[in-house]
Length: 86
Image (cartoon, rainbow, N blue to C red; front, top):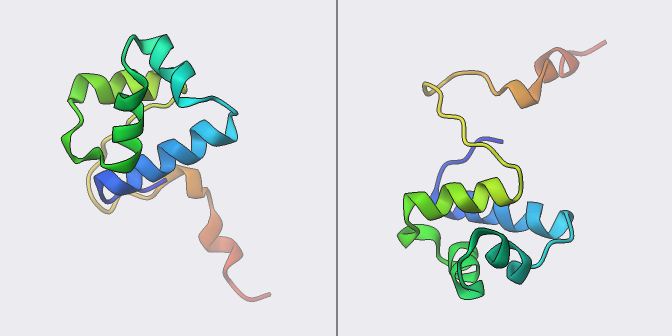
């Protein structure tokens, strides 16, 4: 997934957490932060500490990949070939 803003990242994170059926409290306990820290990240991620961000990501087995702008999204696979008419 291509992320363009802190809010995009927070939305993706929240969606993944809910999809996995994990509560904010469970995440908080796993990474030794308060539940409101998880909530604040999901609602207003602009002020999250970088260390906390990586701990939050690790709790859901998510990774952060930084690539040069314009690099094709590997998650998209060969989607462009399917957009061609028969």
